[in-house]
Length: 264
Image (cartoon, rainbow, N blue to C red; front, side, top):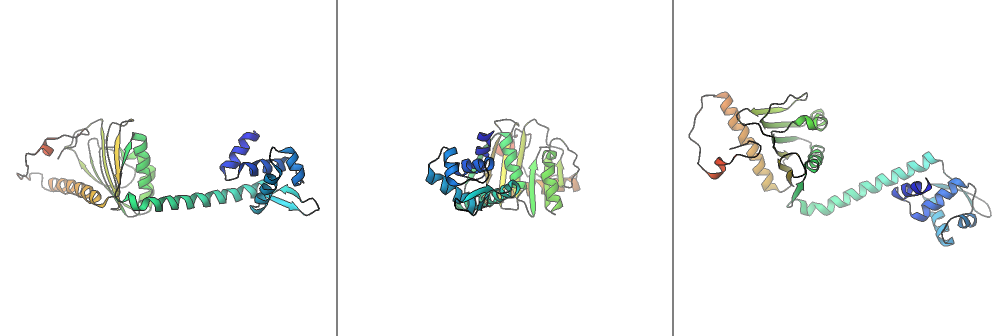
């Protein structure tokens, strides 16, 4: 148990010596440096340095006397101090990492392999959206109901072009469903969030599922245009069912049918 406690304390930011000395004081209140040194496997200077650090962090209290005796701080107070320190350091580290990445991520295309990794990336994107998000997919968005509901509560506009199977949602979307595209067991998803980041993916929902994430502005504008044009044509055909126009170009792209059943 003490080994696990030491590991947990180190995980919260204590050095090994600090954790050992703190545990000893928990077990032996009113101890001075000399007494602690006899009980722990540490050099005397390391013990006194650890005592000084623990005292400065408010994890132990000093009893004024000739021998400088120490007692442990109330555990609830001590652990709350450690929690606050840990969270502060975590926030600062995240900010520093984001600053390091900022100059490169604008141009990078990040390849994501595996359906679970794709879902984690999508949920991270959904957690950052503030204004609007465009989605083209044949995937059941109920899989992300919790994240989408939070967006709706925050007045985020959600625009979806869907095809394949028609799903029922208990949350409000601006959905444009294309019944002409066939059903498939492979997924396709294109996402553009706040016109600042994008995610495109395809494949069967397993470890081979492939996705690409980027903040590259050219790619974002092209994917946004793709989703918008698909909705424009769908709205046109819904409003004018008999509309015909010889617009096909007889290209390779027109002949391609995506794994998900989507085609131009």
